[in-house]
Amino acid sequence: MASYVHTHEITQRLRVVPEMEIGDGSVQQNVITAVVVVCRCEDSDNPDLGVASTDPWVSLDLDACTAADFEPLADMTALPDRCVTYLDQWAADQRGGLEQQLAGRVNAPREEPAPWAGGPDGVDSTSDAPAA
Image 1 (cartoon, rainbow, N blue to C red):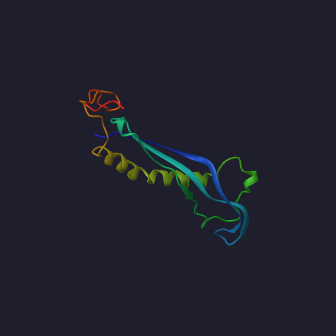
Image 2: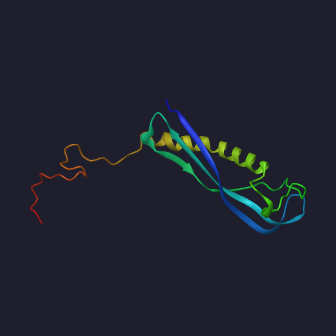
Image 3: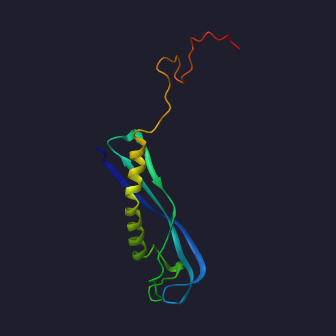
C-alpha cells in the first residue's frame, strides 16, 4: 500500500505583463499573469521510487479580477490571497497525476549490475579477454 506525501511551493518566479486589460475591462500595469508552482510527491512506504514532481508556469485566472481587486506590483509584499488560494487548489489538483507517476515506477524496468559481475560497476574482473 502506498503512503503518498505531497508538498508544493509557490515560488517567487512571476510572469508579469507590462500593461493589460483585466476581467472588468480596466487596463492595469504590471499584471502578474502566471507563477511557477513546484509540486512534489513521494511514497514514504517505498522511497526507492524517488520523487515525482512538476514545476510549470501556472496561469492565474484574471477574468473575475476588477480594478478594485488590483494592487500595484511595486506595493505588494506577497501574492494576494485570492492568487494563493487559486494556486493551492491547482497544486491539489496535481496530486492524482503525481501518484500515478510513482505507481508506474513500481514495475518499471531498471538497470542493475549482474550478480555474478566482479566489480561494483558490473565489469567482470575475471574475464578471459586479453589486457589492453
